[in-house]
Amino acid sequence: MISGLRRTWYGVVCVALCGCEAGRSEKLAPVVGKVTVNGAPLTSGGVTFRPDVEKGNLTQHIPVGAIDAEGRYELMSATKKGAPLGWYKVAVSAQEPIDPKNPYAPPKHLVNPRFSDAAMSGVAVEVVEKAAPGAYDFEVAK
Image 1 (cartoon, rainbow, N blue to C red):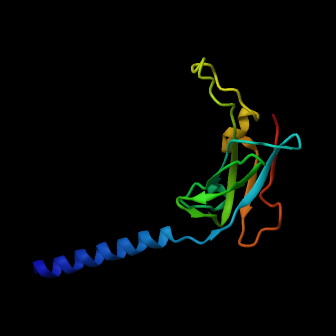
Image 2 (image 1 turned 135 degrees about the vertical axis):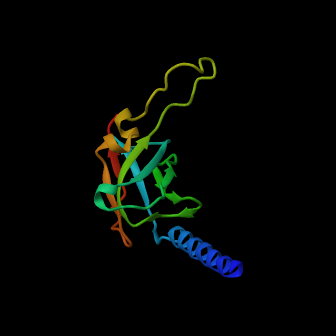
């Protein structure tokens, strides 16, 4: 009887582990883009894609990417390049470096602070397998 329970338990554990692994292996599509402010490249900061549950995106990943000196970014989901397919609300945040002489001063935003919150930014995008060039480019306001 105990050995039967053990086999059942091991079976349940194996199925659970396989299910968890399947969730980790979501298909990722490459996401690269450029962020501009008033037509000029944003030269620092980050981009975050928050899954839009209202549009059916149930992924557990929150893809993020750093913005380089030319305004370009590439999303990563955990340690892999890309983002799971689906709709996302987008946040863009960028601040001036902290002044070491005044480390308690409030941050100086390089973009309008509303863009730092994906729910408030008003920016949404669908990640697809083969996106058109520029599909993930964003223009934000200062």
